[in-house]
Image (tube, rainbow, N blue to C red; front, side):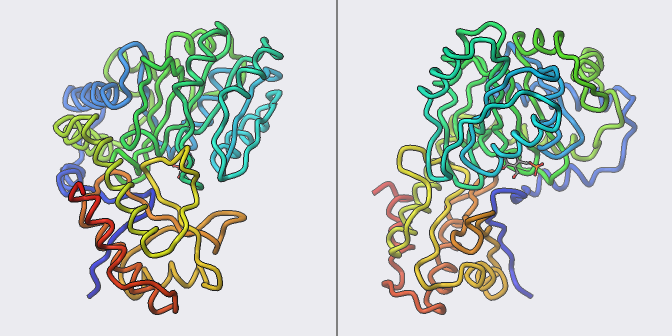
Length: 382
Ligand SMILES: Cc1ncc(COP(=O)(O)O)c(C=O)c1O
């Protein structure tokens, strides 16, 4: 037997309370019992998204379903949108918007760069007819954190332009204040900071986004926000929901409320700091720039001369610790340690210990124990 540790930025570990809640016998969804579950989920999600003003809709889909829903509900073919991307998931938004015939302009950055709000401001000044600005808050492919608060202030000046934020690995890991920052549409997926298996997505819709939805003429059915809003007013869903996942979601939201959103984010910040300190003490180089590092995932360069795929595979097969590799151009060149959701101090210590053993096996020169020591110093508040 080998004990396994899931240290990826999604799917993420699921607490036993949530697993047990999902194992309850099936209930029918058109019942008062399930209506109570819907109410709990919506109220809990509003709490984690930090919104009173926006509606929160829940889909039986992965996060990409929520991404697609934001395009088909906010826009019409030919609408001008600005997509800021510095990684794989920003690119996905571009692919979806292009597939639906929007007039897409991209502000394209390298994967190690942060989106510059001043570029967005300059673009909107030149293109005041733009209907949307789309950005990934926490780029999972690169670990880069973009400043959606600054973008919220910029887009707020344009009454017909909505700010759409992919916070799929942001929610529950970094601050994402939907109302206070003027974020019109914010989305997440269940297999991330919500500590559930994959299969659910949630999205917020501000009054400004509802206005955009009124104007939108793109075809839609399964992801038609208005159908979800109508059902939500009766505490139900338009189609058969993922009943067990929603029961699990009500449970995980209960855990999140008990800890408190500020404390959750502080825990993530601390774990991210310890992971970074541990890696740097081993002589490794962090991938994301100091000006924009998120708390969900720590991407690290594979040391010169080492095989990145082998590193990930030794971590998993020899030590039972699953981390993620790099994506696209960075396949084999970086590895990513996830610490998003149900994580504590000793997940980080265990992972760094496995990393040290793996690096030793691969012939990397470092002082054994130095990574763990540096992480412990952070965790002990030194
Ligand atoms: C930032 C971000 N956006 C979008 C997605 C896509 O979500 P899904 O794979 O659930 O469709 C992911 C998944 O990892 C993500 O991390």
